[in-house]
Image (cartoon, rainbow, N blue to C red; front, side, top):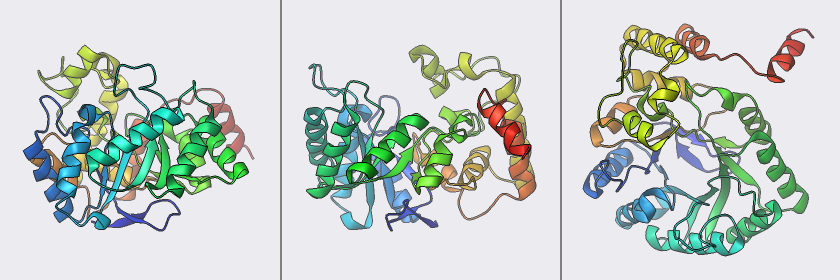
Length: 337
């Protein structure tokens, strides 16, 4: 596995990051299966693991912590997140200083470590002033409990505001952005990726296989998702990757191209979808998730080879979506210069 820069920090991370959202989750990865995946990932050269306090209500962090206790802690780059509710109290959610600090302490305890390498704000909190959030994050870096800070699920203007305010106040800068980005979600390119590139941020895409849609299980002509699949569960829970949201011509067009390229290069569709993302400008490390070791091993097969220009262009063209205003106007104006 190759290594890439985590923004401008000087830290090297594996080109794939292992996402721990499935660890300890009902009907997904048991603790023992999670250990098998962690071992296999590390043996493949992976050193970057991403979790969050809310994944399986803390169980994911506990599993990572128990595994980490048997490893060389400093050889691994551990990322977690804070924002969403872990309790029923009125202050058990959000990015208030009270909740942020309490959540970090709890995460450190579950992870069995004195520090996390990357603490990420899981989403914007409209109830808490941005300056309060950034000064609190600055403080936990200064006291040594956190090495670097980043954000996830921000809009472009929110990301730029946070960067500008940190710079103006002399606070610890953000070093990473964790957005959704994949062949079925290209809107990330409109503002978020340009800001990240301009500001030198690492980009860590989540859901690179769009909840399983790009893993090879779904083809044109399928009338409903397989029972028990993530897409079927998403339909019940209202998640973004639900069948009713993505079973449309735009998706089938992308999948047609994905299967054609996969056949051409003799790779699994999931590997091709991940490889496309790995070769996109500005991407640092897609976050791969798996229910079991077999799925993980397929995903790890996205490394060690490259798509050609023709294959990249085929996938990019098939997944293009019409730009809304003002992006369409700005694109036209740029071409007219």
